[in-house]
Every structure is written in structure tokens, then in C-alpha cells.
Image (cartoon, rainbow, N blue to C red; front, side, top):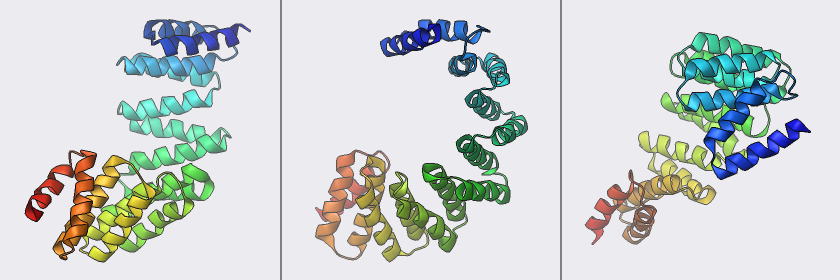
Amino acid sequence: MRFLADGRLLELLDADGDAEAVYSLAARQAGDADSPARGVFGGLLGILQEQQGDIEASLRTLEDAARDGDLTALTLYAQTLVESGQVDAGRQVYLQVMEAGDADLAVRAMLALGQTYHDEDALRARAWYRRAVEEGEGHNSALGAMFLGALAKRERDYPEALNWYQRVIDSGDPESGLAAAHLGELCYWLGDRDGALRFYELTLGLSEQDELVAEAACRMGEIRFERGDLELARRLLVRVVETGDPSFAPEAEALLSKLA
């Protein structure tokens, strides 16, 4: 009952924005050896300490919480190690997460391991991402495919990128609009204007995010402008300006000035 009461109190304090009281309650519960959820509160306390910039205290707290068997705390411990620059140690903790028996957290650990290699060792990154795609389900599997698509896009490997991004699009995952935009951009980089139009049009059908709408409409407007389809170009470029996107709205305004 005391744990349930503290959990409810935590929700109320958080809703009121009382950060000091939330911290105090988390610290008290994390230090209570009799608490049935000491690890849960330890994980919360570790996050709060990290947000305050006390990385050393955060690592100690998360390590203690992980020793109590809380797998979420173990995952947070791995993440904080990596973010603090202790990448090899973080990788070892992620391997512990994978061995702990929770299938969902194991797949997330695979994705995180892939991320630690993403910029330095594409081969190892791919191996972890592929495993996440194969062993994961739903959004976790889609994220693995997104990361694999990103590696292929970086290497300008259109067939490989298409394979992974199309998989995300076909799944109907919330990342599908972003996957289509990545394919549109890759086609644009490669000079395939028809492909860019196709995938950017798909982006507009899959997403209402301003940044994706702005990119897709701007590139489509540019291509339509180049091809002399000026009325359609104008409508697309006006749509970009209406988003107010700092990256693409100025470019769209410049093209619109040529249509005046």
C-alpha cells in the first residue's frame, strides 16, 4: 500500500511540476531496502540525476538499481554509460540486457548496440540491426529496418535502401512517412527526378509532419518548376512556405519569386 501511495503521489507531484519533491520521493524510495519497487525508483532517480548533470551519481544509482534486478534500470545504465563516453562498458551492459530474458528489451539492446557502431563500423552495425529486424516485432523491427536503410542511403546504395525503407512503408509503421522521404532524398541525390517525385508524393500521403511536408513539397515544387509545370509548382511551394520550415521555406520563397 505504501508503494502504491508513493506511486500515486509521484504522479501528482510530477503533474504539478514540483521537481524537487519528485526528486526527494524518488531518492527515498530508491534507498528503501524494503520497497517492492526499489529498482524502478532507482531508475527514475538515475534519470533525474543525469538531467541535473551529475553523471557520476546517475551511473552509481543506475548500477545499484540494476543489481536489484530491474531490467529497465540496467538498460538505462547501459545508455548512460554510452552517452558519457564509456562506450565499451555500455556495450557490455547491453549484452547483459540481452541475456536477461526480456524479448522486447533484448531487441532494443540490439538496436542500441547497432547505434554504438553506426558511425565507426557499418558491418557490425548492420549485424545488430539485422538481428533486431529478424527477432523483433512491430515498431522495434521497423526501427531496425530504418537504421539499415540509413546505412545504405549513406553509401548511396539505392537497391539496398529501397529494400529496407520499403519494408517500413509496407508495414504501416509511424516511421513510414520518414522512410518515403529518405527514398525521395536519395533519388534526388542520384539525379533520379522521377523517383524523387514518386517517393516525395508518397511522403505527403503518409505524413503531416511539417518538416517532412516541407521537404517533400519543396523538392516536388523545384522539379515541377524545372519541367515547366508552373501552376503545380506554385501550389507546392506555397505549401512549403505555409509550414514555416526554416530549412525549406526560404528556398521555396526564392523559387516563388521567379514565378511572380
